[in-house]
Length: 85
Image (cartoon, rainbow, N blue to C red; front, side, top):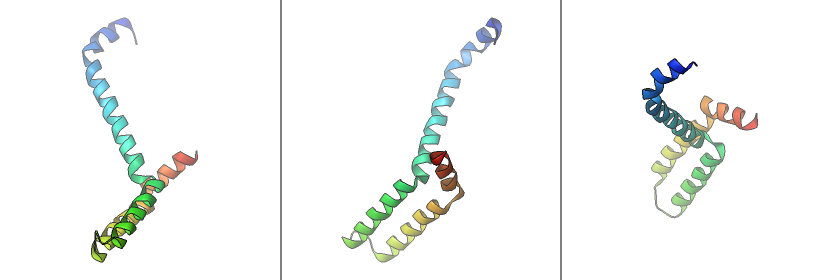
């Protein structure tokens, strides 16, 4: 970029910074959402909650299905590829 372009785009720098931060937060949230280790921990916590009577069988089944769907989703596959690569 030339000096003139830099000067013209300078007022947009804060906007570009906010967009970059938002993108970083979204990427981190997606990594955590589809991380197999995180999902397994949540499944363990769910089983403990069922064992301790904090939730009933219906709540357990619903939450487990959601977690397993996240684990089997294409986004989780992408996460595994990025982690392995």
